[in-house]
Image 1 (cartoon, rainbow, N blue to C red):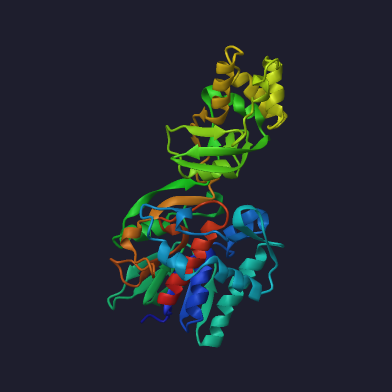
Image 2 (cartoon, one colour):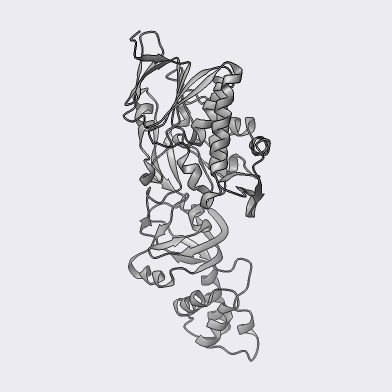
Length: 397
């Protein structure tokens, strides 16, 4: 063996959420782990998540909160490592946290506490006769099989040999932070399929006849947004390019080009009930006032014009009401990977073992985290998949 070829039990590619968790788990099992990161800093997406407070899991996490070509694949890993397990870890390190809406858990302080916790977990490997050696700025990564059946990993930081390689390099989301398609290249190299990657949890872009919506930039409202047969009731935010906010980001993962985005501006509320009362005022001004009782004034004024009835009889008002609960928009696209929080698609789960994340066609090669065709909803679900898949692989290697 060449003198400059360093020998480890496991090489983990990518020091994000999944990679750090996998390395710590394997290291604490006595494995000698090389953790290679092509950036100069670990956990960059952890640091920026949740507005800098890291939405690290969700109390209600289950397989139903994920999108995949194989909806059953994530069940094993998610059952093995649940939100309560990560909460126990967070509390062991004395990191204060709080619950926001819909089971979302955040750090009280900086998300840096989560990164420092994971690094501390990696350092604990030394007490178990293992080790996790972190190698930063490891660019130009290449992986090849050795004659003995193991792997040789070559990069700018040197050459590494191991019986196991775990690919935790993520997807294409948040491209400005250095996202690459390395996981997909390695999957294809070793005979695995790749489900076409797409931007998910991403703002929607409007144009054409709907460009007038951008005049409402900055307006936020609680709505229900539907796409692909799914409905999400949360906040919507109008931007200078179209729509964002939790409800729209959630729906974007189910929306497909050419399909409508359906908005309900007041779920469960009859907006025009008072206008249909005998003797009630019925004119554009009354419509605007009725909408202003529930919606922000700028949005109410916009919708009063966009949905104004042709007449003011009960039938016309009822049709106006229906339109306000089934308002159709026609996005021209999304803001793409640059603004996407996660990547949909990825390494085809048909080629992976669900309990371990190991590639069926390439024993010793594992894929975890965002690289895999498992995409969570907004609200801590993708982090829980990172922890769960990282633990699954870390316990198997």
